[in-house]
Image 1 (cartoon, rainbow, N blue to C red):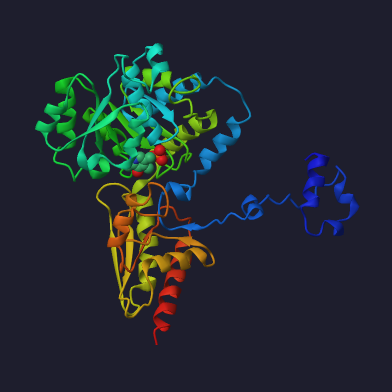
Image 2 (tube, rainbow, N blue to C red):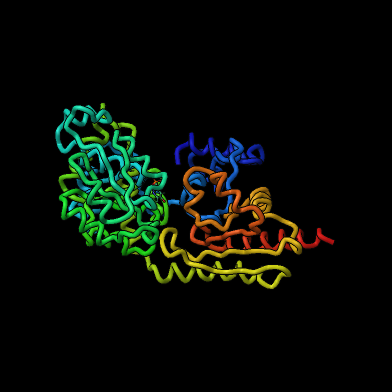
Length: 431
Ligand SMILES: *Cc1c(COP(=O)(O)O)cnc(C)c1O
């Protein structure tokens, strides 16, 4: 250790004055190590136990240790961004059974970039013209099922395209014209639309129009990483900062070689493009790759059992309290993880779901939990706030929802204790 570092370490010690002067000499090694700077505390930023899930507004996920290590070690060197994207893209493509892949700054970015690639091809003049499509000869429409037109499709609008909604196969056939750039599918609402995955892919092949699928939050199961590439979708979009536990500001675009090559032309390091703002640094590109590799190599059965054990622990702590009902469900699509709903009779427990959420948030330790009976994706789009129309239907929903996949080992004990405490307090306050 250098003398300067030792001195720095000493000033961070509360009892620095009590340390003998000899300790600052380079010949002795003081046992005390510099205390880590607590930037959250310094700035007054609240940290919390995340029992809610992989929500962007809660900073998504905690990166795997291996990812943080790679980010640290690669931050000490320069390299060419294109070279990193080339090499990482090849490896990712092998892992997910696609022709090609690139790291983007999230699934949303992958959607914009993938579509931009379709529109421009490898014509750099067109790349510079986006998002102005008129008079350029570029296509301008994306077709998707009405129930698949979620707010994230805004990513497509950024290229200047508009969305055309359809419901039936006949609708698709009618809607397709010379302006159709893409047929897009949203996996999370796959069961809400009439047209199924395979039919969607077949429509694309029949009309020679690329098909895409948004699977942003759809691992586990891990097999979804390759399932839709194998099925024949031309583009697949996924988030890096959800269950994969890569950088929150990263994602992956997988798909056809020619489209990915064209998407790369629209992406940094090139400037003057619609996606110049979608910059991903080398550390994150490499971190995303490592996260994916580690995610695939995870013992998924063991991880699932661990989530179940934690959820059962929380359930057991509250299920026998008066007025309480509990239920564990596994969403069929999207955020597929054991999810515990705790409901209460509000004549026994004087509390609303939102009040419970606030008490957990303001308690010690601070805990974030879901507070509505809605599927998580309804309020992960931006913030705490739910669409007012939807919020209305939640009145009287005395529910707290808990997932365990973003908990650190042992945190389930604190979550169980705190929820139990609040339920007991609220039922005692009645009498
Ligand atoms: C999270 C999510 C996105 C956005 O992904 P980012 O990686 O945050 O850009 C898009 N679509 C769906 C369905 C999502 O759940």
